[in-house]
Length: 56
Image (cartoon, rainbow, N blue to C red; front, side, top):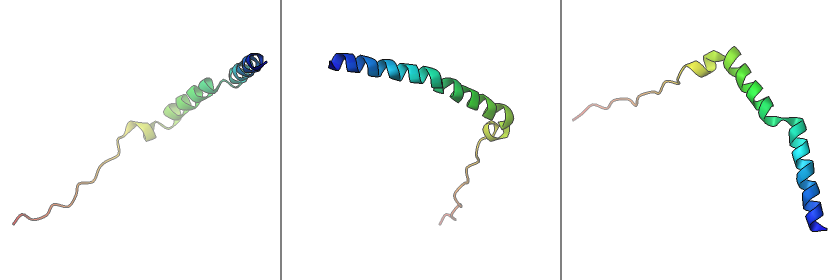
């Protein structure tokens, strides 16, 4: 009984993931972000330097 329940649960999970296609949606979102918002991804954030202290 528990084996059949585990099999049906795995089958239902696989069917649900196949219908939702989360990886395809993530890929499409990433492509849109890079294509239309390239300025967010092209530059590197600049790091500030700590103020230099006078040496004694």
